[in-house]
Length: 187
Image (cartoon, rainbow, N blue to C red; front, side, top):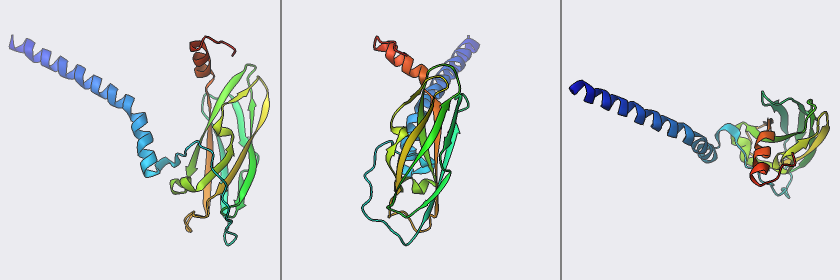
């Protein structure tokens, strides 16, 4: 009888532990987002359109490196038109990224930006960014996706180079599910 009670407590403890671990794992993403927002770590940036600066600091130049990354399941070719530019803080720079859908089917992508060093993230202003919208491409279609950026004149003096990286994700399945839930199936 004592063994049975002991086993029951052990099983109950294991089940509760598993449920707590599952709940903690489920809560990690929002907790991570809050942590990154508070600390500025991971270079996470807000996907909101910035207002251009009115002051240009001609006394210094900052290198802006642009990087393109495909998620491992993304069958597109993706690259910046220019991989590096130099600009004065406050100066606007217009460039683009190129994307080509290498499949025969229609796909929708979403670009997620990241800035390094993370301390520079609040100072990199995206005035116009393809990351604000989903990017649909037909099979074998190529598209130039515009980007207009500026670096705030308040950028700390010790930062001389900023890396802006975009990771491209396939969101076609999610879009199909969203449209199906709305009673539409135009994809």
